[in-house]
Image (cartoon, rainbow over all chains, first blue to last red; front, side, top):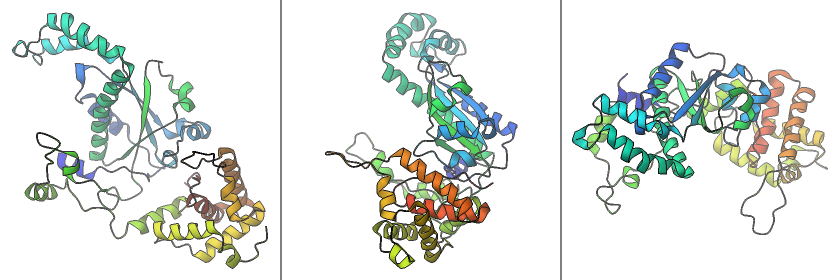
Length: 260
Length: 121
């Protein structure tokens, strides 16, 4: 599948086939995709704990629920718990120098080992980490890139994915996360029980509402030629809902005994 | 509680809200209003409460300045347990019982009280 089609095919899947486990190979593919995401300081801002649903007791699983994370937890066969590491820039002196050594950060742009030791770490990274909010925001943003790559890799492998909030206290004793890590999302993974394309792409606001040229005074309107090209490449697909979507939801509710 | 017929039940505000919302959100549902009302009527008898009272009990009394309604989690849990009990004792258990139980959950959900059931696998 081409990259653009993978982007076009991704949906937040909320009905999984609970009986069908995710193959280990596909889990590894998602983790390796996450590992190759863009990252500031070339440092690891995330940790992931992977777990099959059945590794948790019903009580633990119920404890994970939030007002917005509900039946999804019962249906998804695989959980990936994501944590962020706001202390990751501490690795900067080593990881940045690695980038200097492999020719990624070069003297042409002012980089050297001395610049890392004498300027970047003491004047940029250390002060940044002293501001808990900024450090957490940076880490969350960086981890988000990794999550996105993991999700897209999963979609390309035919899996469904959906990010959810969770109550970390419920699984604190199970996950045994170090105190300096902050729990952020659980990525639910499995084979979709619903149409993987969920009856169309979900609503998005017009491009001009979020993207601007030069200043906020100048919104960027979508280009019809580009839209047509992206339709051909399947990055842009029919908008939800398909005429049969409500029937599908009703059938899924009946099959799983869920409320309508 | 003095509700003897589904017609009387359908007069309640929360029942009207439920039916209106479920028709809007689940137009493809194969459950009929007759099923819905009959199932809820039995549940009201078990709870010995009318539908408006059950929903009202799930919310805290609003305080001055409150912008949002707040759920009473203990009450909601007690209704969740009562629905599970009804599935087994009132609606025949198994898949049929679960389907009936989920009709009651639907009544609560469409009145803003989130209810969950473990999916049938």
